[in-house]
Image 1 (cartoon, rainbow, N blue to C red):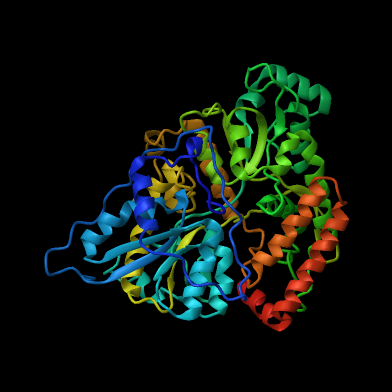
Image 2: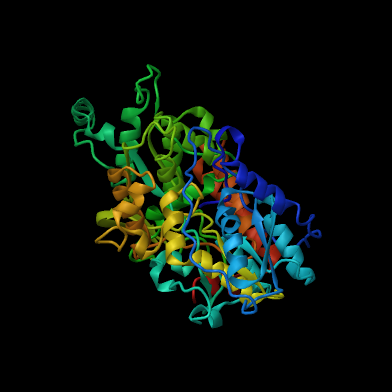
Length: 540
Protein backbone atom coordinates (compact mmCIF):
# COMPACT_ATOMS: atom_id res chain seq x y z
CA UNK A 1 0.00 0.00 0.00
CA UNK A 2 1.20 3.42 -0.96
CA UNK A 3 0.88 6.37 1.44
CA UNK A 4 -1.79 5.62 3.99
CA UNK A 5 -5.31 5.44 2.65
CA UNK A 6 -8.80 4.28 3.42
CA UNK A 7 -11.12 2.16 1.28
CA UNK A 8 -14.22 3.58 2.93
CA UNK A 9 -17.50 3.16 1.06
CA UNK A 10 -19.56 6.33 1.53
CA UNK A 11 -16.83 7.64 3.85
CA UNK A 12 -17.30 4.80 6.37
CA UNK A 13 -14.99 2.07 7.61
CA UNK A 14 -15.69 -1.45 6.46
CA UNK A 15 -17.53 -2.79 9.50
CA UNK A 16 -18.81 -1.86 12.94
CA UNK A 17 -16.18 -4.09 14.54
CA UNK A 18 -13.39 -2.12 12.98
CA UNK A 19 -15.07 1.13 13.99
CA UNK A 20 -15.14 -0.12 17.57
CA UNK A 21 -11.49 -1.15 17.36
CA UNK A 22 -10.54 2.24 16.01
CA UNK A 23 -12.44 4.04 18.73
CA UNK A 24 -10.94 1.83 21.43
CA UNK A 25 -7.37 2.20 20.20
CA UNK A 26 -7.70 5.95 19.70
CA UNK A 27 -8.83 6.25 23.29
CA UNK A 28 -5.74 4.54 24.65
CA UNK A 29 -3.61 7.63 24.52
CA UNK A 30 -3.57 11.33 23.84
CA UNK A 31 -1.31 13.27 21.51
CA UNK A 32 2.44 12.82 21.67
CA UNK A 33 4.80 15.59 22.59
CA UNK A 34 5.58 18.18 19.95
CA UNK A 35 8.17 17.13 17.43
CA UNK A 36 11.58 18.78 17.17
CA UNK A 37 12.12 20.76 14.01
CA UNK A 38 14.77 18.42 12.59
CA UNK A 39 12.75 15.80 10.67
CA UNK A 40 11.30 16.44 7.25
CA UNK A 41 9.17 13.34 7.01
CA UNK A 42 5.43 12.97 6.44
CA UNK A 43 3.00 10.79 4.54
CA UNK A 44 1.20 12.34 1.60
CA UNK A 45 -2.40 12.19 2.72
CA UNK A 46 -4.99 9.48 2.37
CA UNK A 47 -7.08 7.97 -0.38
CA UNK A 48 -10.78 7.28 0.03
CA UNK A 49 -12.57 4.95 -2.38
CA UNK A 50 -16.35 5.10 -2.64
CA UNK A 51 -17.25 2.97 -5.69
CA UNK A 52 -16.57 -0.45 -4.17
CA UNK A 53 -17.00 -2.29 -0.87
CA UNK A 54 -13.92 -3.88 0.73
CA UNK A 55 -13.43 -7.59 1.31
CA UNK A 56 -14.61 -9.26 4.52
CA UNK A 57 -12.03 -12.09 4.47
CA UNK A 58 -10.69 -12.99 7.93
CA UNK A 59 -7.05 -14.21 8.11
CA UNK A 60 -6.39 -17.58 9.80
CA UNK A 61 -5.56 -17.84 13.48
CA UNK A 62 -2.18 -19.59 13.79
CA UNK A 63 -1.15 -19.72 17.45
CA UNK A 64 -2.81 -21.53 20.36
CA UNK A 65 -3.17 -19.81 23.74
CA UNK A 66 -0.19 -20.27 26.02
CA UNK A 67 -0.75 -22.56 29.04
CA UNK A 68 -1.21 -20.77 32.37
CA UNK A 69 2.13 -19.96 33.93
CA UNK A 70 3.99 -20.53 30.65
CA UNK A 71 3.24 -17.31 28.80
CA UNK A 72 6.58 -16.00 27.61
CA UNK A 73 5.75 -12.29 27.72
CA UNK A 74 3.28 -12.27 30.61
CA UNK A 75 2.97 -8.84 32.17
CA UNK A 76 4.59 -7.02 29.24
CA UNK A 77 2.83 -4.41 27.12
CA UNK A 78 3.54 -3.67 23.47
CA UNK A 79 2.35 -0.24 22.36
CA UNK A 80 2.18 0.24 18.60
CA UNK A 81 1.50 3.52 16.82
CA UNK A 82 -0.65 3.17 13.71
CA UNK A 83 -2.17 5.39 11.04
CA UNK A 84 -5.92 5.76 11.07
CA UNK A 85 -6.17 3.75 7.86
CA UNK A 86 -7.01 0.29 6.56
CA UNK A 87 -3.28 -0.53 6.46
CA UNK A 88 -3.63 -0.89 10.27
CA UNK A 89 -6.37 -3.53 9.97
CA UNK A 90 -4.12 -6.62 10.33
CA UNK A 91 -2.65 -5.31 13.59
CA UNK A 92 -6.11 -4.72 15.04
CA UNK A 93 -7.26 -8.16 13.89
CA UNK A 94 -4.36 -10.03 15.50
CA UNK A 95 -4.65 -8.45 18.95
CA UNK A 96 -6.62 -11.27 20.61
CA UNK A 97 -4.45 -14.00 19.10
CA UNK A 98 -1.20 -12.26 20.09
CA UNK A 99 -2.32 -11.61 23.65
CA UNK A 100 -3.59 -15.18 24.16
CA UNK A 101 -0.41 -16.73 22.73
CA UNK A 102 2.08 -14.59 24.65
CA UNK A 103 0.44 -13.26 27.78
CA UNK A 104 1.40 -9.75 26.71
CA UNK A 105 -0.98 -6.85 26.21
CA UNK A 106 -1.17 -5.11 22.83
CA UNK A 107 -2.02 -1.44 23.08
CA UNK A 108 -2.62 0.43 19.82
CA UNK A 109 -2.70 4.18 19.34
CA UNK A 110 -4.02 5.56 16.06
CA UNK A 111 -3.45 9.03 14.70
CA UNK A 112 -4.05 10.70 11.37
CA UNK A 113 -1.62 9.75 8.64
CA UNK A 114 -0.17 13.25 8.53
CA UNK A 115 0.63 13.06 12.25
CA UNK A 116 2.09 9.56 12.37
CA UNK A 117 5.78 10.28 11.99
CA UNK A 118 5.67 13.36 14.22
CA UNK A 119 4.22 11.34 17.10
CA UNK A 120 6.81 8.59 16.82
CA UNK A 121 9.72 10.96 16.26
CA UNK A 122 8.79 13.02 19.31
CA UNK A 123 8.76 9.87 21.41
CA UNK A 124 12.10 8.50 20.25
CA UNK A 125 13.93 11.83 20.37
CA UNK A 126 12.67 12.59 23.89
CA UNK A 127 13.33 8.95 24.86
CA UNK A 128 10.02 8.71 26.67
CA UNK A 129 9.58 5.13 25.49
CA UNK A 130 5.86 5.45 24.98
CA UNK A 131 5.83 3.51 21.70
CA UNK A 132 7.52 0.17 21.15
CA UNK A 133 6.79 0.14 17.45
CA UNK A 134 5.06 1.95 14.66
CA UNK A 135 3.92 1.17 11.16
CA UNK A 136 6.51 3.00 9.10
CA UNK A 137 6.86 3.99 5.49
CA UNK A 138 10.12 2.93 3.86
CA UNK A 139 11.15 6.48 3.02
CA UNK A 140 11.37 7.29 6.76
CA UNK A 141 14.04 4.68 7.37
CA UNK A 142 17.00 6.94 6.58
CA UNK A 143 15.78 9.58 9.03
CA UNK A 144 15.23 7.06 11.80
CA UNK A 145 18.44 5.09 11.30
CA UNK A 146 20.55 8.25 11.01
CA UNK A 147 19.12 9.38 14.35
CA UNK A 148 19.83 5.95 15.92
CA UNK A 149 16.16 5.59 16.85
CA UNK A 150 15.49 2.01 15.71
CA UNK A 151 16.47 -1.43 16.94
CA UNK A 152 17.50 -3.91 14.24
CA UNK A 153 15.89 -7.33 14.52
CA UNK A 154 18.72 -9.47 13.11
CA UNK A 155 19.17 -11.42 16.38
CA UNK A 156 15.49 -12.39 16.47
CA UNK A 157 14.89 -13.24 12.83
CA UNK A 158 15.94 -16.91 12.79
CA UNK A 159 15.26 -17.59 16.46
CA UNK A 160 12.80 -20.54 16.57
CA UNK A 161 11.06 -19.08 19.63
CA UNK A 162 9.44 -16.47 17.39
CA UNK A 163 6.92 -16.89 14.56
CA UNK A 164 8.89 -17.83 11.49
CA UNK A 165 9.03 -15.92 8.21
CA UNK A 166 11.82 -15.87 5.66
CA UNK A 167 13.17 -12.58 4.35
CA UNK A 168 14.42 -14.47 1.29
CA UNK A 169 10.80 -15.11 0.30
CA UNK A 170 10.49 -11.40 -0.46
CA UNK A 171 11.43 -10.59 -4.06
CA UNK A 172 14.70 -8.69 -4.52
CA UNK A 173 13.41 -5.16 -5.02
CA UNK A 174 11.08 -4.93 -2.00
CA UNK A 175 13.51 -6.99 0.09
CA UNK A 176 16.11 -4.24 -0.30
CA UNK A 177 13.82 -1.82 1.56
CA UNK A 178 13.74 -3.96 4.71
CA UNK A 179 17.39 -3.28 5.55
CA UNK A 180 19.55 -0.21 5.85
CA UNK A 181 23.28 -0.67 5.57
CA UNK A 182 23.80 -4.27 6.63
CA UNK A 183 21.09 -4.46 9.32
CA UNK A 184 17.42 -5.41 9.18
CA UNK A 185 14.89 -2.88 10.49
CA UNK A 186 11.53 -3.28 8.72
CA UNK A 187 9.61 -6.54 9.21
CA UNK A 188 8.04 -7.50 5.89
CA UNK A 189 4.39 -6.51 5.52
CA UNK A 190 3.32 -4.43 2.50
CA UNK A 191 5.17 -4.46 -0.84
CA UNK A 192 4.49 -1.39 -2.91
CA UNK A 193 5.17 -0.77 -6.56
CA UNK A 194 3.29 0.67 -9.50
CA UNK A 195 2.03 -1.28 -12.49
CA UNK A 196 -0.02 -0.64 -15.62
CA UNK A 197 -3.77 -1.24 -15.58
CA UNK A 198 -5.73 -1.50 -18.82
CA UNK A 199 -9.16 -2.62 -19.94
CA UNK A 200 -8.64 -6.09 -21.36
CA UNK A 201 -12.14 -6.15 -22.84
CA UNK A 202 -11.46 -3.03 -24.89
CA UNK A 203 -8.28 -4.47 -26.36
CA UNK A 204 -10.16 -7.63 -27.37
CA UNK A 205 -12.98 -5.76 -29.14
CA UNK A 206 -12.90 -6.35 -32.91
CA UNK A 207 -14.16 -2.87 -33.81
CA UNK A 208 -11.59 -1.19 -31.59
CA UNK A 209 -8.84 -3.37 -33.05
CA UNK A 210 -9.78 -2.35 -36.58
CA UNK A 211 -10.16 1.36 -35.86
CA UNK A 212 -6.93 1.54 -33.86
CA UNK A 213 -4.97 -0.21 -36.61
CA UNK A 214 -6.34 2.23 -39.18
CA UNK A 215 -5.40 5.25 -37.08
CA UNK A 216 -1.97 4.26 -35.75
CA UNK A 217 -0.84 1.61 -38.28
CA UNK A 218 0.02 -1.05 -35.72
CA UNK A 219 -2.11 -3.52 -33.75
CA UNK A 220 -3.98 -2.57 -30.60
CA UNK A 221 -2.04 -4.31 -27.84
CA UNK A 222 -0.85 -4.00 -24.26
CA UNK A 223 1.44 -0.95 -24.41
CA UNK A 224 5.12 -1.79 -24.11
CA UNK A 225 6.33 1.79 -24.53
CA UNK A 226 5.04 5.10 -23.22
CA UNK A 227 4.40 6.16 -26.83
CA UNK A 228 2.07 3.19 -27.24
CA UNK A 229 0.44 4.08 -23.92
CA UNK A 230 -0.14 7.59 -25.26
CA UNK A 231 -1.63 6.27 -28.50
CA UNK A 232 -4.01 4.04 -26.62
CA UNK A 233 -5.04 6.88 -24.29
CA UNK A 234 -5.67 9.15 -27.27
CA UNK A 235 -7.69 6.50 -29.10
CA UNK A 236 -10.05 5.72 -26.22
CA UNK A 237 -10.42 9.26 -24.93
CA UNK A 238 -13.94 10.58 -25.53
CA UNK A 239 -15.47 7.15 -26.23
CA UNK A 240 -18.18 5.56 -24.10
CA UNK A 241 -16.31 2.83 -22.21
CA UNK A 242 -18.98 1.63 -19.78
CA UNK A 243 -22.17 1.73 -21.86
CA UNK A 244 -23.88 4.62 -20.09
CA UNK A 245 -23.89 6.87 -23.15
CA UNK A 246 -21.46 9.38 -21.60
CA UNK A 247 -18.02 10.00 -23.15
CA UNK A 248 -15.22 8.61 -21.01
CA UNK A 249 -11.46 9.05 -20.83
CA UNK A 250 -8.26 7.53 -22.07
CA UNK A 251 -6.66 7.48 -18.64
CA UNK A 252 -7.10 8.33 -14.99
CA UNK A 253 -4.29 9.62 -12.73
CA UNK A 254 -4.10 11.49 -9.40
CA UNK A 255 -2.19 14.73 -9.98
CA UNK A 256 -3.21 16.89 -7.04
CA UNK A 257 -0.50 19.29 -5.87
CA UNK A 258 1.12 18.39 -2.55
CA UNK A 259 -0.33 14.89 -2.70
CA UNK A 260 1.02 11.90 -4.64
CA UNK A 261 1.54 12.97 -8.23
CA UNK A 262 5.31 12.81 -7.85
CA UNK A 263 5.10 9.05 -7.27
CA UNK A 264 3.54 8.58 -10.70
CA UNK A 265 6.18 10.75 -12.31
CA UNK A 266 8.94 8.75 -10.63
CA UNK A 267 7.58 5.48 -11.98
CA UNK A 268 7.03 6.86 -15.49
CA UNK A 269 10.40 8.61 -15.63
CA UNK A 270 12.49 5.62 -14.58
CA UNK A 271 12.77 4.19 -18.09
CA UNK A 272 13.96 7.55 -19.45
CA UNK A 273 16.82 7.77 -16.93
CA UNK A 274 17.73 4.33 -15.59
CA UNK A 275 19.21 1.75 -17.94
CA UNK A 276 21.97 -0.83 -18.29
CA UNK A 277 24.72 1.82 -18.38
CA UNK A 278 23.11 3.90 -15.62
CA UNK A 279 21.53 1.66 -12.98
CA UNK A 280 21.73 4.09 -10.02
CA UNK A 281 22.04 7.76 -10.92
CA UNK A 282 18.60 9.32 -10.67
CA UNK A 283 18.31 11.59 -7.60
CA UNK A 284 21.76 12.88 -6.69
CA UNK A 285 25.39 12.52 -7.63
CA UNK A 286 26.63 10.29 -4.77
CA UNK A 287 30.02 12.04 -4.84
CA UNK A 288 28.89 15.67 -4.72
CA UNK A 289 25.23 15.40 -3.63
CA UNK A 290 24.32 17.68 -6.54
CA UNK A 291 20.76 17.06 -7.76
CA UNK A 292 20.35 15.18 -11.05
CA UNK A 293 16.63 15.78 -11.36
CA UNK A 294 16.83 18.14 -14.36
CA UNK A 295 18.70 15.75 -16.65
CA UNK A 296 17.51 15.43 -20.27
CA UNK A 297 15.91 12.10 -19.37
CA UNK A 298 13.88 13.62 -16.55
CA UNK A 299 12.81 16.46 -18.82
CA UNK A 300 11.61 14.13 -21.57
CA UNK A 301 9.71 12.07 -19.02
CA UNK A 302 7.92 15.13 -17.66
CA UNK A 303 7.10 16.24 -21.20
CA UNK A 304 5.54 12.79 -21.68
CA UNK A 305 3.47 13.08 -18.50
CA UNK A 306 2.30 16.60 -19.32
CA UNK A 307 1.26 15.45 -22.80
CA UNK A 308 -0.81 12.62 -21.29
CA UNK A 309 -2.89 15.00 -19.16
CA UNK A 310 -5.08 15.93 -22.15
CA UNK A 311 -6.44 12.37 -22.31
CA UNK A 312 -7.86 12.34 -18.80
CA UNK A 313 -10.54 14.42 -17.10
CA UNK A 314 -9.29 17.91 -16.36
CA UNK A 315 -10.47 17.42 -12.78
CA UNK A 316 -7.72 14.86 -12.17
CA UNK A 317 -5.29 17.75 -11.64
CA UNK A 318 -7.02 18.01 -8.26
CA UNK A 319 -7.49 14.29 -7.60
CA UNK A 320 -6.00 12.16 -4.87
CA UNK A 321 -5.54 8.42 -5.61
CA UNK A 322 -8.96 7.38 -4.32
CA UNK A 323 -10.79 9.64 -6.74
CA UNK A 324 -8.65 8.41 -9.62
CA UNK A 325 -9.29 4.80 -8.66
CA UNK A 326 -13.04 5.47 -8.47
CA UNK A 327 -12.97 6.75 -12.05
CA UNK A 328 -11.29 3.58 -13.30
CA UNK A 329 -13.45 1.28 -11.16
CA UNK A 330 -16.59 2.87 -12.60
CA UNK A 331 -15.40 1.89 -16.09
CA UNK A 332 -14.70 5.48 -17.09
CA UNK A 333 -11.04 5.14 -18.13
CA UNK A 334 -9.17 2.75 -20.39
CA UNK A 335 -5.81 3.08 -18.67
CA UNK A 336 -4.14 3.89 -15.40
CA UNK A 337 -0.93 3.11 -13.62
CA UNK A 338 -0.93 2.80 -9.88
CA UNK A 339 -0.37 0.54 -6.88
CA UNK A 340 -1.72 -2.93 -6.19
CA UNK A 341 -4.78 -1.51 -4.44
CA UNK A 342 -6.44 -0.74 -7.76
CA UNK A 343 -6.22 -4.31 -9.02
CA UNK A 344 -7.60 -5.66 -5.75
CA UNK A 345 -10.36 -3.07 -5.50
CA UNK A 346 -11.45 -3.96 -9.04
CA UNK A 347 -12.54 -7.34 -7.66
CA UNK A 348 -14.79 -5.95 -4.93
CA UNK A 349 -18.55 -5.51 -4.91
CA UNK A 350 -19.50 -2.39 -6.87
CA UNK A 351 -16.65 -2.58 -9.37
CA UNK A 352 -17.74 -2.16 -12.98
CA UNK A 353 -14.52 -3.65 -14.33
CA UNK A 354 -14.12 -7.00 -12.58
CA UNK A 355 -13.10 -9.58 -15.16
CA UNK A 356 -11.99 -6.83 -17.54
CA UNK A 357 -8.78 -5.57 -15.90
CA UNK A 358 -5.45 -6.44 -17.44
CA UNK A 359 -2.25 -5.66 -15.57
CA UNK A 360 1.33 -5.46 -16.83
CA UNK A 361 4.69 -4.10 -15.83
CA UNK A 362 4.98 -0.42 -16.68
CA UNK A 363 5.85 0.52 -20.26
CA UNK A 364 9.37 1.55 -21.17
CA UNK A 365 11.16 3.87 -23.54
CA UNK A 366 13.13 3.22 -26.69
CA UNK A 367 16.06 5.25 -25.37
CA UNK A 368 17.20 6.59 -22.03
CA UNK A 369 19.57 9.38 -21.06
CA UNK A 370 22.51 7.82 -19.27
CA UNK A 371 23.66 10.36 -16.70
CA UNK A 372 26.73 8.17 -16.14
CA UNK A 373 27.69 8.45 -19.84
CA UNK A 374 26.24 11.87 -20.54
CA UNK A 375 24.35 10.77 -23.65
CA UNK A 376 21.18 9.15 -24.94
CA UNK A 377 21.35 5.36 -25.26
CA UNK A 378 19.07 3.50 -27.66
CA UNK A 379 17.89 0.02 -26.72
CA UNK A 380 16.98 -2.87 -29.00
CA UNK A 381 13.93 -3.70 -26.87
CA UNK A 382 11.88 -1.24 -24.79
CA UNK A 383 13.87 -0.17 -21.75
CA UNK A 384 11.55 -1.21 -18.91
CA UNK A 385 12.48 -0.44 -15.30
CA UNK A 386 10.97 -1.88 -12.13
CA UNK A 387 9.98 0.18 -9.11
CA UNK A 388 9.08 0.00 -5.45
CA UNK A 389 7.31 3.34 -5.57
CA UNK A 390 5.20 4.01 -2.49
CA UNK A 391 5.34 3.42 1.24
CA UNK A 392 5.79 -0.36 1.63
CA UNK A 393 4.39 0.03 5.15
CA UNK A 394 6.01 -2.23 7.73
CA UNK A 395 6.59 -2.41 11.47
CA UNK A 396 9.82 -1.23 13.07
CA UNK A 397 11.03 -1.51 16.68
CA UNK A 398 11.93 1.59 18.69
CA UNK A 399 15.47 1.49 20.08
CA UNK A 400 14.23 2.23 23.60
CA UNK A 401 11.32 -0.20 23.50
CA UNK A 402 10.55 -1.67 26.92
CA UNK A 403 9.47 -4.93 25.28
CA UNK A 404 11.59 -5.43 22.13
CA UNK A 405 11.29 -9.22 21.95
CA UNK A 406 7.52 -9.17 22.41
CA UNK A 407 7.31 -6.41 19.79
CA UNK A 408 9.25 -8.48 17.29
CA UNK A 409 7.02 -11.47 18.09
CA UNK A 410 3.98 -9.40 17.09
CA UNK A 411 5.55 -8.14 13.86
CA UNK A 412 6.82 -11.61 12.95
CA UNK A 413 3.35 -13.09 13.50
CA UNK A 414 1.95 -10.59 11.02
CA UNK A 415 4.72 -11.55 8.57
CA UNK A 416 4.07 -15.30 8.62
CA UNK A 417 3.19 -17.01 5.37
CA UNK A 418 -0.44 -17.85 6.14
CA UNK A 419 -1.22 -14.35 7.41
CA UNK A 420 0.59 -12.63 4.56
CA UNK A 421 -1.14 -14.79 1.98
CA UNK A 422 -4.55 -13.83 3.35
CA UNK A 423 -3.67 -10.12 3.37
CA UNK A 424 -2.40 -10.19 -0.21
CA UNK A 425 -5.42 -12.15 -1.46
CA UNK A 426 -8.06 -9.87 0.04
CA UNK A 427 -6.29 -6.70 -1.07
CA UNK A 428 -8.65 -4.24 0.59
CA UNK A 429 -6.33 -3.91 3.59
CA UNK A 430 -3.81 -2.15 1.31
CA UNK A 431 -1.19 -4.89 1.68
CA UNK A 432 0.21 -5.74 -1.73
CA UNK A 433 1.98 -8.92 -2.93
CA UNK A 434 5.75 -9.25 -2.99
CA UNK A 435 6.74 -12.70 -1.73
CA UNK A 436 7.39 -15.82 -3.74
CA UNK A 437 4.43 -17.65 -2.26
CA UNK A 438 2.10 -14.81 -3.33
CA UNK A 439 2.71 -15.56 -7.01
CA UNK A 440 1.32 -18.30 -9.22
CA UNK A 441 3.53 -20.87 -10.99
CA UNK A 442 5.94 -20.56 -12.68
CA UNK A 443 6.68 -17.30 -10.83
CA UNK A 444 5.91 -18.66 -7.38
CA UNK A 445 4.12 -21.34 -5.37
CA UNK A 446 0.65 -19.87 -4.76
CA UNK A 447 -2.49 -21.70 -5.81
CA UNK A 448 -5.02 -19.79 -7.83
CA UNK A 449 -7.78 -21.29 -5.66
CA UNK A 450 -6.76 -19.03 -2.77
CA UNK A 451 -7.39 -15.96 -4.90
CA UNK A 452 -10.60 -17.28 -6.43
CA UNK A 453 -11.96 -17.95 -2.95
CA UNK A 454 -11.10 -14.36 -2.09
CA UNK A 455 -13.31 -13.21 -4.98
CA UNK A 456 -10.78 -12.59 -7.73
CA UNK A 457 -11.53 -13.16 -11.40
CA UNK A 458 -9.00 -15.71 -12.63
CA UNK A 459 -7.80 -13.81 -15.71
CA UNK A 460 -7.50 -10.62 -13.66
CA UNK A 461 -5.44 -12.19 -10.89
CA UNK A 462 -3.11 -14.03 -13.26
CA UNK A 463 -2.26 -10.78 -15.04
CA UNK A 464 -1.98 -8.88 -11.77
CA UNK A 465 0.41 -11.26 -10.03
CA UNK A 466 2.62 -11.76 -13.06
CA UNK A 467 2.91 -7.98 -13.50
CA UNK A 468 4.10 -7.58 -9.93
CA UNK A 469 6.51 -10.48 -10.21
CA UNK A 470 8.03 -8.93 -13.33
CA UNK A 471 8.20 -5.50 -11.70
CA UNK A 472 9.95 -6.68 -8.53
CA UNK A 473 12.25 -9.15 -10.31
CA UNK A 474 13.53 -6.67 -12.87
CA UNK A 475 17.28 -6.13 -12.27
CA UNK A 476 16.80 -2.48 -13.29
CA UNK A 477 14.99 -0.61 -10.52
CA UNK A 478 14.11 3.01 -9.85
CA UNK A 479 16.38 3.99 -6.91
CA UNK A 480 14.35 4.52 -3.74
CA UNK A 481 15.03 7.76 -1.88
CA UNK A 482 15.13 7.21 1.89
CA UNK A 483 17.44 9.75 3.44
CA UNK A 484 16.90 12.55 5.96
CA UNK A 485 14.84 15.28 4.33
CA UNK A 486 13.09 12.98 1.87
CA UNK A 487 9.77 14.60 2.62
CA UNK A 488 11.16 18.08 1.91
CA UNK A 489 12.70 16.90 -1.34
CA UNK A 490 9.48 15.21 -2.43
CA UNK A 491 7.23 18.04 -1.29
CA UNK A 492 9.09 20.49 -3.51
CA UNK A 493 9.19 17.93 -6.31
CA UNK A 494 5.45 17.38 -6.10
CA UNK A 495 4.60 21.06 -6.12
CA UNK A 496 6.72 21.85 -9.17
CA UNK A 497 5.45 18.79 -11.05
CA UNK A 498 1.86 19.89 -10.40
CA UNK A 499 2.65 23.30 -11.89
CA UNK A 500 3.98 21.64 -15.04
CA UNK A 501 1.03 19.23 -15.29
CA UNK A 502 -1.38 22.17 -15.07
CA UNK A 503 0.51 23.97 -17.86
CA UNK A 504 1.61 26.89 -15.68
CA UNK A 505 5.33 26.29 -16.30
CA UNK A 506 7.34 24.25 -18.80
CA UNK A 507 8.75 20.85 -17.83
CA UNK A 508 12.27 22.29 -18.02
CA UNK A 509 11.38 25.17 -15.70
CA UNK A 510 9.62 22.86 -13.25
CA UNK A 511 12.60 20.54 -12.97
CA UNK A 512 15.07 23.41 -12.71
CA UNK A 513 13.03 24.81 -9.82
CA UNK A 514 12.96 21.33 -8.28
CA UNK A 515 16.75 21.08 -8.50
CA UNK A 516 17.12 24.46 -6.76
CA UNK A 517 14.73 23.33 -4.01
CA UNK A 518 16.68 20.09 -3.62
CA UNK A 519 19.90 22.04 -3.22
CA UNK A 520 18.35 24.29 -0.58
CA UNK A 521 17.27 21.26 1.45
CA UNK A 522 20.69 19.64 1.11
CA UNK A 523 22.44 22.80 2.31
CA UNK A 524 20.04 23.17 5.23
CA UNK A 525 20.60 19.60 6.41
CA UNK A 526 24.34 19.58 5.65
CA UNK A 527 25.87 18.39 2.41
CA UNK A 528 28.38 16.01 3.99
CA UNK A 529 25.78 14.39 6.23
CA UNK A 530 23.36 14.03 3.32
CA UNK A 531 26.03 12.56 1.08
CA UNK A 532 26.90 9.96 3.73
CA UNK A 533 23.25 9.06 4.20
CA UNK A 534 22.60 8.88 0.47
CA UNK A 535 25.58 6.64 -0.16
CA UNK A 536 24.56 4.38 2.71
CA UNK A 537 21.02 4.13 1.29
CA UNK A 538 22.51 2.98 -2.02
CA UNK A 539 24.75 0.45 -0.31
CA UNK A 540 27.91 2.33 -1.32
